[in-house]
Length: 390
Image 1 (cartoon, rainbow, N blue to C red):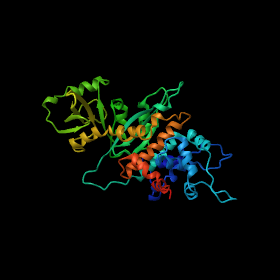
Image 2: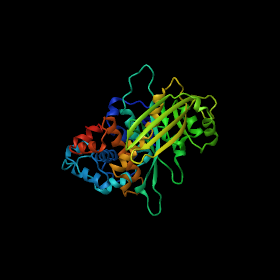
Image 3: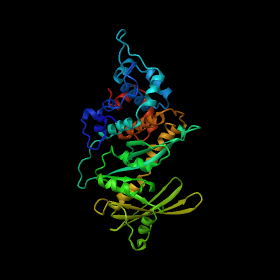
Image 4: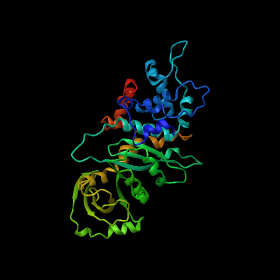
């Protein structure tokens, strides 16, 4: 990763309002993988054009190339395409040119640039009486369409705040899993005053120590794959502990009750752990009448002064928003699992551009991503304005 990009992406990055307004400032620092000879179109122009096309709903390389081909001259100029010195007209790249760049671009550098851009666009919150914690979910996704007869599908690990903004993404190494990618994923994110949520796979002592060192908190699920830790939490006198929070909801043809209890516990065998949490979920299917009861245990570095039981309950439930706000949208709206792009870093690059589009719309207050894509596609100025390229 180039030094300039590292400065933008690191947690202590300082950016101006002008930097935060435009994506080009960040994409300029993504290294161009092409040879110097014969470069007709700047890499940042091609990347900006691809990002703008995805903002209008382009799902494939062909759709991206068609969007660029149809773009008016003034749009090509704003994207950064040079004018021919003889005719004064701006030419458009061949689809193969776009493909070659996107399939060879450094995925880590591109994701770092996108993550830094989205973090720079996030306005600092007004200082409340008690500093607000930013909830960040970490979860992995398999890009099924990238599977071939000889290779397995790629896996991507993403960090998304609970409002739907993707802050970082990392490709999991072949024949590995999410655990080694956890810390590299979060190295480029500002973690001070953040609370991290994840599934039981990420309840690792090393992860807990890393988050404490970075000034972050965590809510970690405890299951029987950690038998010693699970036994410590499970044997607490939960029957004697009073109920701290409960909710009742009726949706998706089921009635659901959630009950939460919190216990301060000083001797949990996990770095920085201060409290244990028990969540009991009662779900009744309104069609069949079937009742299921699920009991989940968690530990947290938050103490009673850091968060209320209602906040803990909201963060625990909010973690699964990464499935609805990100993975579901990429699968259903962008048809990611149906995509047949498999060459080089193309699957990851396309996923990164989709993350950018989804996150921009979320930052702008959009809740229906499909409708936002249709709205943006009706005017060439809209995607450029959203990306700060006008």
